[in-house]
Image (tube, rainbow, N blue to C red; front, side):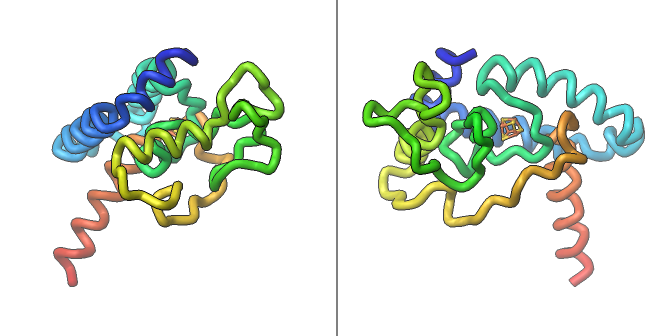
Length: 159
Ligand code: SF4
């Protein structure tokens, strides 16, 4: 929902804290997810993610969430689906070239990033974001994060 999406950016710090707390809980419960089976969990996670993040962030279920790198503004709401900053068509009023009634998601990302860190000078967060993996679309990005964090813990413990 557009208005809620903007509220989330206005409160990016609280939204980010909530997001990371949820992520920490999901990682903590990883043994449960493994036991139940990743395929079944993906369906359940996707259902919850689609509804909660769809409501709060207009999540488009890209399969790899970058909200925490883009000031809690989902770049997939850009009609051009640009993942690394605005195109050259932002209107003078800061709205989108393709959807004039919508604020550019990258101006929103900048607004949210400043709320997260007033000293920031770049969005996304000093990192080039990879393009969307079309095979991941519609799947849970939470599940990927859980697996990534878990595997990085395993590799650290093996080093
Ligand atoms: S970046 Fe992807 S997973 Fe995250 S809110 Fe946007 S569409 Fe959803």
